[in-house]
Image (cartoon, rainbow, N blue to C red; front, top):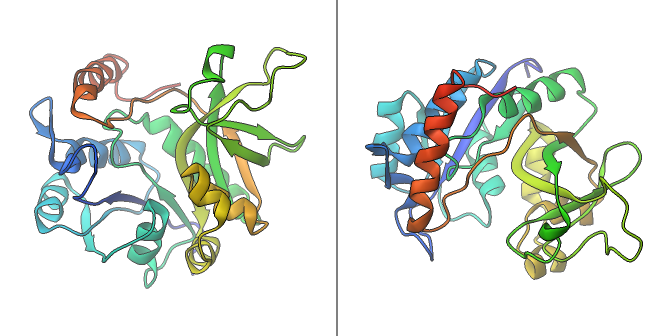
Length: 250
């Protein structure tokens, strides 16, 4: 296994309760998945960019954008789909690039890939940004608290830490990108779902429940997720802002 070989994998399933066919939704005139592929290619740190999907239409759009499509079956989560796509491939680090963030900053992808290359003993990493007190009561914003070494203690949609004695800088907002060493990714996918994961609807809690260290890095910039059709204008504005910065964030 080549430990320096990093792969970007974009999980892109067709079905979505709130937005069916989301990876193919037109964003600034192109399928959303094509924009995500472009951001991963712009990062310049991956040996290959793959799209893991269950739909031939998404596969064709991914290939047209410059990625290698990999067909997968039913999967419990995005990271499980990523694991299915890379199981037989040579890779050291694998970054799960969210398929619904067409303006994901390439600098965030580089952060994860470079951290995992430099720290082969670190099984998993993700990103976070400073939050605000207003984020605490918003269940759509996932909060994270860490230990003194920067490893996640817990993620929740609830208010953590509870502001009984508020201190500045304690609220951190999770940015949903995940990087794994390949053996850790395959181990993650082999574990059963946990009650915490099901209760909060957060796949990263599977790693914590099984004792996997999850390092939380400071993100270079924020991103915009497309959850429902009404989010498309925000995503197009984020793309325009990214382009004005030269396609990266620092």
